[in-house]
Picture: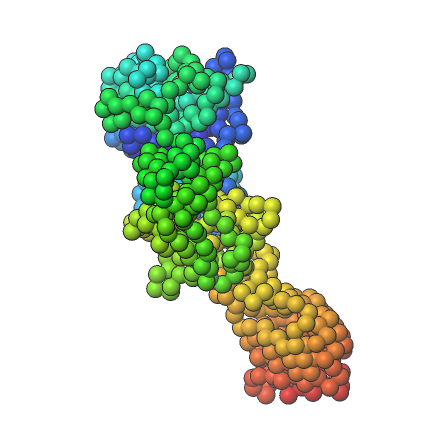
Amino acid sequence: MKTKLLLTTLAAALSFSLFAPTTVAEAASPSSTYTDANGNVHVDNSIQKNVRTLGKKLRNEGDLKAPTNLTWSTEKHGLGSFETVDQEAYYFAWLEDSEGNSRGSWHMGHLKAGTHTVQFYRNIDNSGTYKFRVKAGKNDQDYDKDTGAISEYSATYSYTKPSQTMAVATNLAWSKDKPGTATWTTVDNAEAYLVNLLRDDGTNKKYIIGLYVTGDKSEVDFTKYLGDSGDQKYYFNIKTYSKDIEAIANSDLSANSDALDGSKIDTSKKNDDNKDTESKEVTAESTKEAIASASDGKAAETALDAYIGKVDKNALAVAMQTDSSQKQKIVDMEEAYKQKANVSVTNNITARGIDASKVKLVGAGLNAGANSSVSFNVSATDENSKKAINTNLYKNVVQFDMNLSNASKVAADGTLAIPVEITMPVPEGFKSDHTLHILHFHHSDDGFDLIDPRFNSDGTISFTITHFSVFAFADELTINEVVKDAEGNTYKVTADKVVQFVSSKDKKITKLTIPDTVKLGDTTCTVTSIADNAVKGCKKLTTVAIGKNVTTIGKGAFQNDKKLKTIKINNPSLSKVGKNAFKGISSNASFKLKGTKKEKTAVKKILSKKNTGYKKTMKIK
């Protein structure tokens, strides 16, 4: 799974953290920053989060163990390391100076057991002593450093800033040949650069995104982050990182580049693989027009293929999820293509607990050839194909296979030609709120992406994907959380994989079995108690079977169930029956017990107490 990053602010500069930068690496932040006209850094929570950020707070710490063996490298100055125990979790690190001030936060994503390193040297700019801590979290928003499975502090690292500092990048300029591309003159011996894109909104220069590039690079293409530029102005600045901070210190942040006038970006002229070619920009709008004016379905498909060949699938997926106007352009293009190319899309939902009438797709038709009838299929994942889920992190798991059939543009591994937005009801057994996780598994490995769906006012969720595979819907069954089983009965979580029966699916039932165990999603939970007033007032109920693990029956549990005549109690160790639990049931009711004579006598004594509702006309066998 991709490592995700937390951006943090330092006193007078933007500083970011990354593990082993690739040619271009993108930093995503829960709390983004902008630089004002005086160069001061501020926090701005208005920037849209990455579409795959889970966006949930910690609910239970579970049995996670804190990382151990926090050490500083003796070979790479400022490089920290830690060990994770035999568990998978989300890991976070914090760097502090000698005065306890934060010097940066790192979000390392989902890691397996082993030794991991953190490039703290990128945030070490001033002389002093530094130490760090690491936390194991249950989800990717569990970055509260005051609670949970947090390590002890590392030993201190003493840093004396050398007199020599990395040169600040110079000749910052927007390329004239490559619209939206930032350029600069490389700095000798640079390990890497952080290049920050800023947008002038008329009042402040807002941070948009920071991209890392290796030290031999001298340009970054920001085109896909400029959006519908209009008359907005864009700037960028750069920080240069040293290969050895004890020999040469990291640079200061450069001055901002000159402005790029968004209204003058000519995206119809782009350098394509360094070839001096020129072509008209292919957009959703222009493609829609080309499709609508096509002579036949095949010509419409040719116009669509031209768009598919140009579009950035990942950027389009983000836009469809976060920008309603961008999604509408895809909707319009798809409608035009369906009509001209004779393409239809239907739902084939066989998975239990999903109302097919509420399932809607955007983009599915654009993955089909002309004259095609596409089917969106959702089925329960076969037992042999189910993915392994870390039960320390996720519970109440239901896995589905989702795919498009008869869609010729979908690759064999499920990769889509055009992203698809799926709108569907929350699967049965899950709460319609932001506690829902969606794990979208990879085809190539056992990794997965965490999807943060959009929750709609009609009780549905929407999320956008670039490939089909196994999807796992999961949440964290936390203490006192109330959930429903596949039949609609309600349970409350009282401990790990232990639940209380709260209520039946309706009041009109005639027979009821309170099971030994209940399957909530893919998790089997033991039923150990019946809640107060659980089945009170079920006037048609005649027979109840109480599971062998139930030790407690709550107050008024079966009160006023006037036709209730047969109560089977399968636990010979029943220890408590609440007040009025059986008050108002049939006066001729019969309790059928299991166990030895001694065990039955003990249960009979509990049932026949005066305040339980038991009458002498009732029988206990």
